[in-house]
Length: 187
Image (tube, rainbow, N blue to C red; front, side):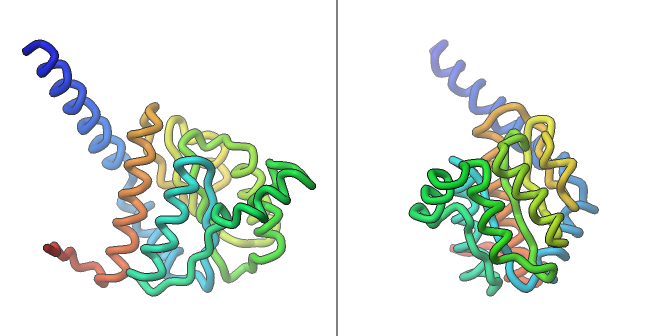
């Protein structure tokens, strides 16, 4: 019985942190983020680890669900490993941006800590090109929060909760655009 309560308390605390973290993203930043996504010619997305998975999932949902043109910079494993081996891992995303990105595009970078060196370097590369950056970050926001034109910051210090919130942010933006601002519940 005590173990059952411990599990219930853990789940309740996790849920509370998740809801609170998402509630900290301002309505103004949500609107700016959605406007940036809708205005972009192409959307380039990157992250590491769990954030790379979110990047790839975002590309799927933005393309299929919202008819946008996203490109994951975290999915081409041969290119990523070639850049990491021949140049430097910290350039795995920035190197791709420098060859692909224009000022009419959007770069979405995802990092729970906001301090991953290759993500920070990618944000700086986007700025050199003149491409706006939408950052999804957690914890204290890190350098990514400061380098983003708009940062959807989930101020929680737990990777799982932050990644779940980033996944939800991606879904909210895709569904909002696909459904033209109408919330739809499917079966």
